[in-house]
Length: 224
Image (cartoon, rainbow, N blue to C red; front, side):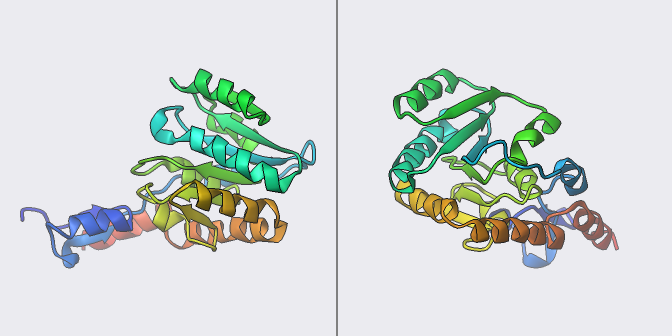
């Protein structure tokens, strides 16, 4: 009652705030990163080998659900039957369990620990698919960062900003369970045109809505 404007960062955020305020008080302040900076790191290079590369970057905790990613890759491998590798960027209490589990499933997995944005970009430019299947995540900025590298995304519907940043069958897939994840993964593994199209569509989403320019414009509008 005592504020003039309330900023929301995504649709789920807005839906929650509407319980306490009318729509006229709400203004969009997009969840975003410095897109120009990340695109400056996106210097495409030829892949070192012909292996399809799947990547996840996050803190390695149970909530991030990397075990389910490994299970899904294991199932997809049975049908894909070509070389692929899984790259994991990040540290956390689940790291040694995940290393053992990947070895048990015989999935070629490389763990890099925590990396700076610049160092992480060296692996993003060589990756074909990004996965984040968190049980819950409010607003992981890694989604915005990855989108600037034009990589198709498979994300859990439990991620707060996923419905805004990842549009089903436009720049990636939103999934609720392992079966949907495996199906989505196989679609991307088997179709380079889809991967390329989804990557370009991510740029469209960022340029239209999730950028610093929109933040500035909407603050300015709210002050006038």
